[in-house]
Every structure is written in structure tokens, then in C-alpha cells.
Amino acid sequence: PVSPVNVTVTGAAGQIGYALLFRIASGQLLGADVPVRLRLLEITPALKAAEGTAMELDDCAFPLLQGIDITDDANVAFDGTNVGLLVGARPRTKGMERGDLLEANGGIFKPQGKAINDHAADDVKVLVVGNPANTNALIAQAAAPDVPAERFTAMTRLDHNRALTQLAKKTGSTVADIKKLTIWGNHSATQYPDIFHAEISGKNAAQVVNDEKWLADEFIPTVAKRGAAIIDARGASSAASAANAAIDHVHTWVNGTAEGDWASMGIPSDGSYGVPEGIISSFPVTTKDGAYEIVQGLEINEFSRTRIDASVKELSDERDAVRGLGLI
Ligand code: NAI
Image (cartoon, rainbow, N blue to C red; front, side, top):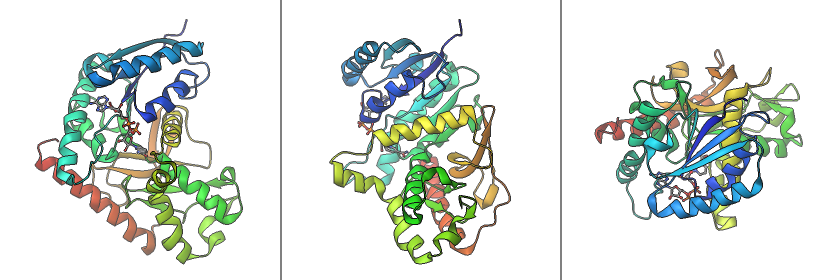
């Protein structure tokens, strides 16, 4: 029998956890022939709720699900982990300054990074979903010096997927017609969804759209502010679509991008495209055999350069702030 892949989910009793766990257990994360063992990490008061979710997972009788462990100890949760989905985070509450937010999340992601460093499997891959995702990923990565830095990634796939649909609607195409779209920068309001290299049924997307005003005044803000629009409409934050994007991110990383296409991932910069080395910023990437590479050689026009620089500046400021707090 094939030994199961250990998948650890933090914040397992939360909204995204509830939308995510069933899809992992059904085989959508890694493949329909890959058995999984789930490790759920929660804070102590939420353990009971996590147990409730585990009861429902049992009741699905997923053939691929080989076991569920529930714990409030990161050292246990990450023991032998092959895939870590870091979803639980400290949300920004009213009146909270950025420094307080980063410090509170440092208290979560630094020990989790250390637990991954000390206990995870050699091939561990980490996706940080909990916000501020890019900087939380940086904190965890810095706390795991024995793990190759490139294994720590942050989620911008939801932004990527949101941009695909907005572009499809604008151009009367379908998402399946669109390739090579890119999210650059931070998973925040400064992110830059770039269609200048995207293709719609083989034609350049920016030329098909041919409307820079729509790009600047509608497309970019709609994608960047979609999270707030969902909260406004649903009365709760986007959980199912976030879980879906987490599935897409890991599935792409493990199973590869399609020929002639790429995906967006928040990854440690190697200095490409003028993004300072080390910060975790979103790039266009191709993936193969469980590894990713930044797509090189794209021409960045003035419109894109300004926006990429602004988002990267925000990430550099966040890095300086967590450095100042001694979190990295
Ligand atoms: P939620 O509040 O429903 O769930 C979060 C869970 O994390 C709670 O059950 C909480 O007990 C748990 N938690 C808190 N601290 C923990 C710790 N130290 N260890 C383990 N678990 C811990 O929130 P939801 O809706 O599930 O969202 C989770 C995060 O994902 C938020 O930070 C949210 O901003 C972020 N998010 C990121 C997106 C992205 O595109 N990168 C998209 C949507 C949400």
C-alpha cells in the first residue's frame, strides 16, 4: 500500500478550514489516487469544534482518508508533515495598528515555522493563507533555517482566479480561454493583476480589451477589493473560494502547470523583476515535478512597473517592520 501524504491544516475549525478539509480528504489537493492523513492544528478553545469537523469527515467515509489527528501543539501537528496549509491567523481588529497585527501574527507563525523546521518531512511544502499572508510566510520561513526557503509560499491564487473571471466577463470569453495572467506583489489592496502578457484564445489580452481606463479604474480595483465586496454581500468573508484557491495552489505546485500557461504564487524573491531578494512576493511561475520557476524575460511596461513597485514597496516595509520587531 502507498503510504499517505501528511497534510497539516492550521485554523482547521475556522471557515476556510471547513471548506478545505473535505476537498483535501476527497483527493482534490494531491490527486484522486493519493491517500492522505490529516493533521488539524487549532488553539485549545477551538479543539472541540475541530473534533466536530473530524466527525463529519469520518461520516463522509472518504476512501483516501487514512486518519485524522487533532492537536493544539504545533510540534505534534507538523510531525512528518509533507504539506502544511497555514490558514489560522490573527485577524485585524478595529483600531489595531499594523505593528500590533504583525506582532500578533509573529506569535503564531514564528513558532509554527520552528515546528516545521524541527519536525516536518524533508519534502515539506508550505502554503500560508492566513493574512497578512506574504509577511506571515516570511516570518515562518525565517524561523525554519533548515528548510529550503523556496518551500514557503503565500497564496495569491484567489486573486489570480478572481482576475480570470473578471477578464473573461469583460471579453465575452471563458476562463478556460485565458492563459498567462499574473498577480504581482502582495496579497493586499496594492496587488497588481497584470493582463499585458495574458492571452485569450491565443490573442494578447490587453489588445483584446484595448481599454486602459477599464484596467486602471475597474479591473484592478475590482480584483483587489473583491474580499471586501464579498463580506459586504455575504455578511461573511470568502471562505469557499479561498479554500478552492488553496487547493489550486498546492495542486499546481505538486502536479505542474499546463504547457503554455503559468500560475501566480507568492514566493521568496530571487531578485527577478527588481523585486528585492528574500521578500515573499507574487510572481508568474511555471511548475514541474514539485518545483516552481519564475517566468523570465517578460517585458514590463510603465503602467505595470509603477504598480509592481508600489506593491513591492509595501512588502519591503512589512519586512522592515517585522525585522524591527525581532520576528525575522
Ligand atoms: P476564521 O476566523 O473562520 O478561522 C481562523 C481559525 O484559526 C480559527 O478557528 C482560530 O481558532 C484558528 N487559529 C487562530 N490562531 C491559531 C493558531 N495559533 N494555531 C492554530 N489555529 C489558530 O477565519 P477564516 O475565514 O478561516 O480565514 C483564515 C485566514 O485566511 C484569515 O487570516 C483570512 O484573512 C485569510 N484569508 C486569506 C486569503 C488569501 O487569499 N490569502 C483569502 C481569504 C482569507
